[in-house]
Length: 345
Image (cartoon, rainbow, N blue to C red; front, side):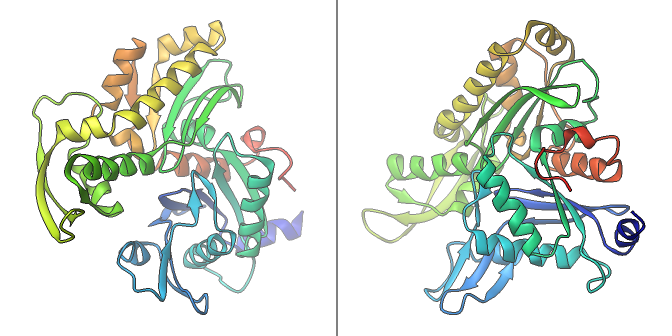
């Protein structure tokens, strides 16, 4: 016990939202210290890591043949084991104060629909990257704690966490998930839908980063009071030369219809499976949206129209999950019940 406390004193224990699009790290006593894209640039011939995070993201779609810019997480889980390890090692080193003393304890948030094999991959990657102990917490519970909801009471709380690769919908009561729906649709699928729309409607090929910019600047899920438009650049698929055109928010809303409908249908399905007593609590308390996808204009209004319930976007949806995980880290004894079984010391 004494040794464990001593190690905790010297090491920088951290909580991590290991996301498909971005990774955020919360350090005990310091708050959020890192918010970087989950991207690694690697030299193909040697496997040497050239850049991690923001610097690597700038290389996406722009690298020569000998360099590969990779997003090692897909749909909220590890797709490339070795590169995820490189990513974690770099981020753990960046936030450590005493780099050579003791290995940190790390809490990592994972999708609620994660399999045992995927859990093991997360734990192994983090341990090999330098963690002495890895604890896993379901993302919806971390998001609910980050929003400030009382997860330990018998009252039902509903959270919809829309990340880059997954949408997690959960009803939480008494430190556990009562009903959950986890679909592998998120911000990435929205970007993909915009890329496909440009291809079909205009015979124009645009990059991932351009699609993301379009989504952020003029994307919406519900008619806007004032529609917008923007200029986009890409490659003409017929003539093979660069081209510029203007697209409107109405067109982008049409492009986003499929992923948005999938998220709304998952919410409806989750509500249908909610026990009546908890459903009554949700009528009173409403639904909370977190994650980067919650920032899509009008998504809360669309959900409100479909469910007739009060739908609120969390104050800072991008940081809810990591703030909740940070709170668990700082009050580990109080939140012991929310940690996934089978991966505790």
